[in-house]
Length: 221
Image 1 (cartoon, rainbow, N blue to C red):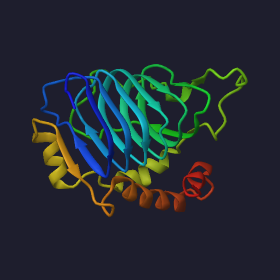
Image 2: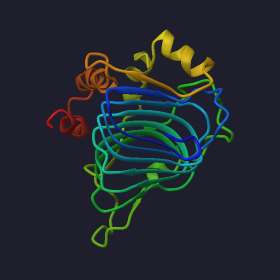
Image 3: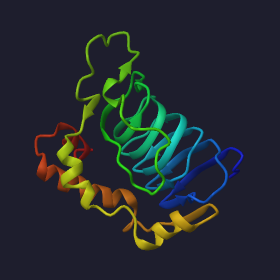
Image 4: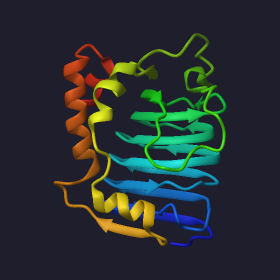
């Protein structure tokens, strides 16, 4: 790993924290991760996620682009200038995008919801013109609006009734985020992995929205 061009790859069941007091602001790249939790509350230049499965990503403000490629069953919490999605599926984005997200052919079963503040650092701009609902695709055959099996808005009640009651981090992790000064890598057991916690939440959400097609797809994998 190098903080000149931060890259972390080929890991499973780990938590990666770059605390808010860290002084560097490099581009970040995460590849070939499974059941990992990535927590970066400070500002980023760019963030690239490639070949991720069942991961949960919490980041601060990205001055450039969030790029996702070959990701499945992931959740991302972020603010970015741009959102670029390459072939990936079954992911949930709680985001704010200053520009319309671009979806390449092969992007399927994505859901998006409004970004909400998960850490103490305030955004540098007012979050008043979120473009997440204005996603565009470059598929030649796609001339109409995006179908729900490609890009679907999560009902606001999903967040209000369920997510606000779900603690993201325990006290020790919260302390590491706010007070740490260096990169932290922690092992996660299978019992405490982030996506197992998330899967439990998804089942709870399904009780609230039994007809939500995206949730049915998540639970039929």
